[in-house]
Length: 287
Length: 314
Image 1 (cartoon, helix red, strand yellow):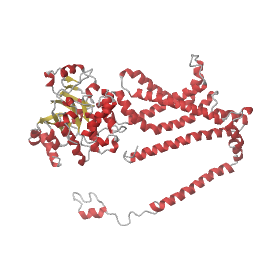
Image 2: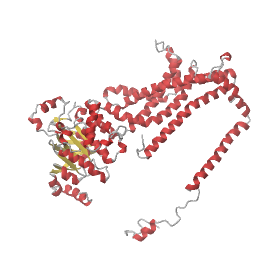
Image 3: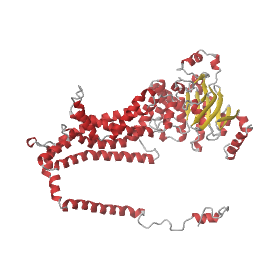
Image 4: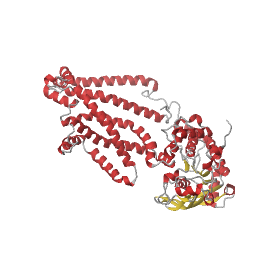
């Protein structure tokens, strides 16, 4: 089978610069009238985001912006707040202070329909979190059928096409526990893509995988990046981050200590904490 | 020989390690009792003997006890048992066998209603919508009350209380209906808690995955959490239904429902022996034991699936 055109396969429009929040009326205008101000909006913008769990302050003032088509990698030790940051963007956690804007619209404002927001954000978790009681295909079509109201056969056709695209077509009728970790994680990525999100959040998606299964998952992410998907990636795979990221952010104790192009952050980190962190990674043979 | 920290600050040299690591030859030979090859036969022999001795002792108790003959006469009188099972209208005897059909009817109707009501209650307690707060409160109070009140009192309360209210449509029902209502009220509280345990056993990450697709709280519950929850609680649910099966006999206290237990009561007061109760007991066992074995099999299958790392065929 010849390599299909990646962009069209993933639904080029959804990967385009104005990934649309079609249900949120205000955004609709901007997106569909081709408002230049809208097109130039950051896909994601965090302003002074704070988040605590009880006494533990996990995010202590995060400012971050992700332009459309950009791939941003978040690096930093476990507990530095990477996952929490991603979960806040997806509204799985509420922020205590500051705001988060998606394509210019404040999604942390009161009265926002969180389900409508999440429809446009794909998130992939470290532990896959596939639905164990559903086949692979049903995992993928659940969102489109039950949230977007796509007819079942249409959703299944689109789902099959995505599975073919990512080399999982013969697994469509299997239950998740019959798949390897790598396959499960690829299915989880496909499940998120099936909603045709405007941005993908990847939360240490290879951390739970056996080493030999990591590359198949990273391959999928590379393809997404090549297709122009906007992505915010929390990762421990430094080599991968160096390859794929437009910008690398180093998180430490809930703040972004340093950010810049990967060449700069990895080879000439300015902050001593970043240097220390990277030295440990190098010592462990991971970079 | 101390293996760790044998000398302050000194590393163990390779020889000490090796010497410490290897047990002397023959260390793994057992004392014969637990050895694998002979164990199978030995264990079978031991269990056979112990079973024979135990059953023998129980039989001896019934044969040689001072009152054994009287007990056999009152509880295990074959002639009376047959009469009680078949019933004999000419002698005013009700059929315990026919009565049991009424028990099965009550059980089946109550079970369907309980499964439904309990699910509604469990889901109500789960939803966090502020509009539903009063219902949530009500659900909590309901489960607290009806789990705490003995079933027999609920049966009295409804069976004798509802008719006394003189409410059209409610106060004119048969005892059969009141009995089922009491069973449903009491058991729904238990079964709702079983459902709730199942719902709580579904990992939060599943909810996160569902919500992140944009599914509402209700849809996440409906399509992701509940299907998994129900699957895990099937064995405990069956357990509750085993006891529901036999608790249908308590409805006999309302008097007018001639189910198996009530039929046995009437027969025993006519024949002046308790053999009819033995018939009822045996019939109930015929119902509950198959269900109990079925439950065991489901649990065993569940365990083996878990041991297989979830890789066994569904």
